[in-house]
Length: 262
Image (cartoon, rainbow, N blue to C red):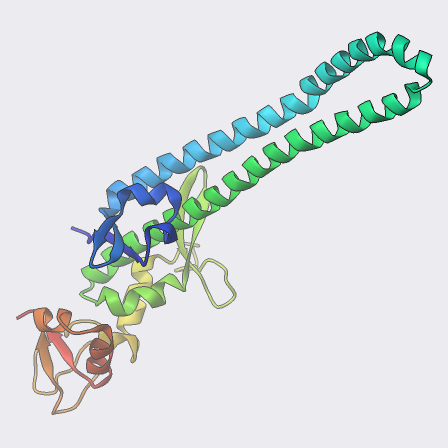
């Protein structure tokens, strides 16, 4: 079972508005925690809803630009017809006509500004939800692959996140591993995509990242995935390792320590 997503905010206002109702207050902090599979589905649904609302807002704006202007013109024409006879007698027709035009322009600008602001707000919310959805999808796949290969998510996940990107293909979201130029990596001459699991396997064989994986076996040298830590290398159980702080974990790995299942 994949671990739940957890994100901590210093205050409730620091969290996105759509997320605040799901926050739990713990030790003066506000924590969002949800199962990955359930949350990803919810994010997708919410994202589709926001897109529909944005489209509706744009449609209303177009309707205002077309229909409401005509209504204004009709009302202005009727009012001008009534007032024209009185204003012409006073010689103030030109002044009044200019006032009406300015008022019409001000009203149009006011309502257009309101709709523009609404659309901008929804654009920002869509971008925020898109980022949250992408991060959830990447973390779900990366955490699963790291766990399968007996790696340490706390150490490896930040590096994996820097090397992958979400692509939308045929209405669905796909995680792709990127090369140094920022292009999707290919696994073979057939053009097979280079998956997150391929990336984790590559990191397991790396002299540096390989230390963040459990030893493939036990021995006097304390070797792990081809990385020898020397005859005095330390061994630590998974339970003890998980109890360390992130800094202590990194120091243990850098010191050539190995993690066992016991």
